[in-house]
Image 1 (cartoon, helix red, strand yellow):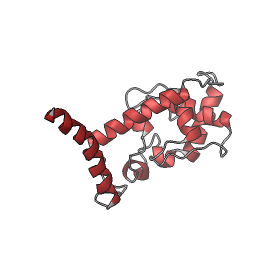
Image 2 (image 1 turned 45 degrees about the horizontal axis):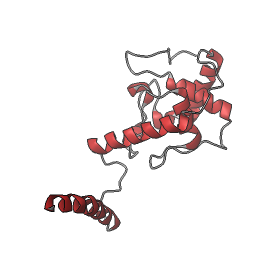
Image 3 (image 1 turned 180 degrees about the horizontal axis):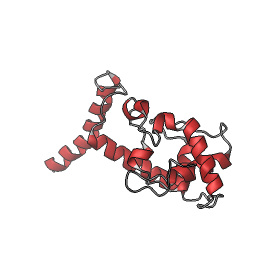
Image 4 (image 1 turned 90 degrees about the horizontal axis):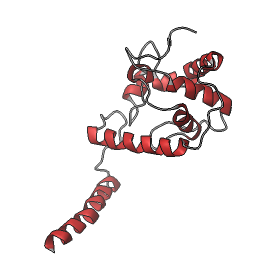
Amino acid sequence: MRTLIAFVAGLIVAPLLLAGAGIIGWLPSNATAEPPGWESSVGMRAIDASLERRSDRLSNPIAQNDLAAMSGGKTIYASNCAGCHGDAKGPSKWGSKNFYPRAPQFFQEGSDVSPAEAFAAIHDGIRYSGMGAWDGMMKENDMWKVANFVANIRGPGGKKMDMDRD
């Protein structure tokens, strides 16, 4: 019985202590801190699960092999996304070091999202990540173009398409 009480107390006390530490300023809040592995792992799993859930009913209106749309997505990405997510020339110095959590560097890391998941992230943003929502700021068709482009980026040695060509 004591073990059960200690377990339940731990479930209640540990989160309260963590919240208290945050409220009184003992937890770091600087964006340049290196995220610990456990936090990155838990955060990425939560984002992946949320994007999968948010995108399961979306239907991509653009064919995956539409080269004109892919080129349009590349142009929009270069103008609006590369500043945080990097490009074929290299990672974004700002997005790879001064965001907490770090902004994915798609050209260097590759992309493991579907077009629908990328669209959900672009359209509605991602809370607590610096990824703002583009809803109302970009046409939905353009968001789909960027989503298709991002979903087709592959990391070094595994590129699905030639990102250096137009």
